[in-house]
Image (tube, rainbow, N blue to C red; front, side, top):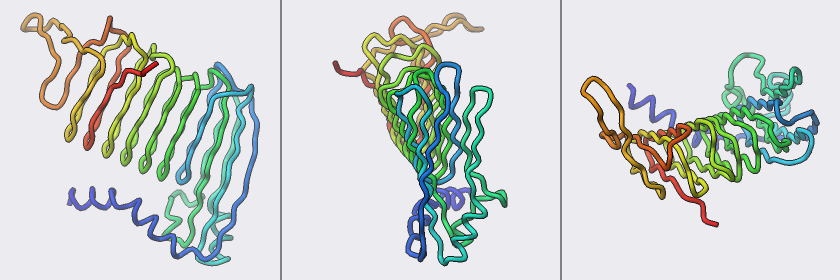
Length: 270
């Protein structure tokens, strides 16, 4: 039963794409919004289907959203517009955009329609990010606030950033590249996909990792870390499919977890 359940989960994205041939009618709507942003502000995007792209720059949070509606009939298209809405709130320094299903589920394909929200957002320096998705990618570039990025079926790509936080997906690779090495803890996780993390020369960190099917590779020297326990001082670097160690002088904790795919730590080239 567990094997069948896992197979169903892994095939879910393929089934969704296969159902595209049923859509007879479609339309789209573009929405623009602007909000205050910067250090101390937070952007929250809670999405189900559709890409989320965020870039650093400007003096405000600038949101461009394209809503795509697809359905089997005009009646189903009207139902999609009633049942799936965009909820927006901005208070206390937090801007939140939420894809709301009024019946409390995401069974649009089964109900005869599909709704996707594609986001292109620009955020000022220092804006914290919480981006959640399910059936598509997340891409972040040139930001300088902390981040929490989560999707299920889709890759995550993070380029030219500062800050730290967590990044995880289930079906898809993760790439993350830092303009300045993180000064706080970082956690990166995927189940099906490779992890590629790019750091600047002179990285100082405490490294830990777990993997199952895939190796762990590092451009940085990783030294065994001493710990004192009941049996005295021990040095732990690699044990089975997990390991830990110190890079440089030590520092924030860098935690990587994978299952099907390699974990690679790269030193960025000048």
